[in-house]
Image (cartoon, rainbow, N blue to C red):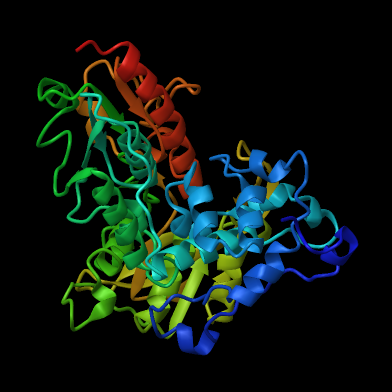
Amino acid sequence: MGNPLEKKDRMKIPRAVMPQQDPQERKRNFKEVPFGLTEEMALREASRCLNCPKAPCIKGCPVDVDIPGFIQLILEKDYAGAARKIKETNSLPAVCGRVCPQEEQCEAVCVMGKKFGPVAIGYLERFVADYERENNLIELPHIEPPTGRKVAIVGSGPAGLTVAGQLIKLGHKVTVFEALHKPGGVLVYGIPEFRLPKSIVQAECDFLARMGVEFQNSTVVGKMDTIDELFAMGYDAIFIGSGAGLPNFMGIPGENLIGIYSSNEYLTRSNLMRAFDFPNYDTPIIYGENVAVLGGGNTAMDSVRTALRLGAKNAYIVYRRSEAEMPARKEEIHHAMEEGVQFMMLTAPVNFIGNGDGKVKAMECIKMQLGEPDASGRRRPIPIEGSNFTLDVDLVVVAIGNSSNPLIPQTTPGLQANKWGNIIVNEETKETSRKGVFAGGDIVRGGATVILAAGDGRVAAQHMHKYLMEEVKK
């Protein structure tokens, strides 16, 4: 059964607008902001798809999801079948439907987008994944007979979970080692509840466990066991997906004052350690009234919106470029503005001022102007002499990016990394300089997106399977 509408009629349908919480209500709670599409809305949005013969949307997807295929199943009202179609290449549709930048990937090349707004592929992905989970229609996929090969996966973020899901289906024994006490990596410690409910991440991990994946939490590979020790324990291949968990700071005076957090620590305390759920969880966290978040990426938006929900009266984004250069998703910037976040553009801190008891009370800033583009392609910010001013703050969150976790490269002889500490891999296979060791996600890329990490995991899994079956002798 094809699309019942003629092409010209599909083009008349406006792109779906997802219902969401009112900004004044949601900025004081941690419930998910968008509600998701209704069935009627999903069917209407799916009918906009032109089912293009060359399907540029598939090429725009880092994990090659058959997008016209799953949208066709929506039109046939086989929503669980649509979710399973996505899962053929993407293990995390409920996650990716929420946090992936479809506007820069599959939707960016949608033919409908040239004149009428792209098909809302991300909304539809979320709809079918939620439908499958909420109606208990999740089915275990076919799993090949045991191969006798053992695989260790270091890190349970999107790259590691993707590798685990692919390799367990191929009959390998898979163990995931996670440093924290819950699996999910950046999905649980880095992304707030209002953007990605933790129950969804847990459901994805529970599904992998049902397939046979073993999770070993609270295990810091590189400290408790090294990569070489994992090989000595009988693992035939290892995937490193340990992420970019080393926070960057600015290196300016006063940065060690009480009340200055890295975004990693601030979000981990709120998200993973559930400081937002007081008194059910009594996790220590500083509640600021005047909160400045430094940076312009998605992590900065997550941090400043978290500060609002934790009671901030004034929540500022302090960013040294203009809004046009901000790397955050436009949707996240829009949500932050709706909620009352104050944006201080073309502004950079130069000094943190204490109150005499070691706590931050103010931040000296300087205004900036944009010069010629730098290596990133964005215009370089240049300080304006004499434009200094002081902003009263009692909490600062530094969200200017992260570096790769250095622990494994430092404890693995022969494992090559670049000057930034990112593990060097063969881009086609994701194999490292150590035989049988593969890597992907932020430990290779630096800070990147969930779907790019999942794409790395998918490529790595394919080549790990080949390595296990052809080069590992039993």
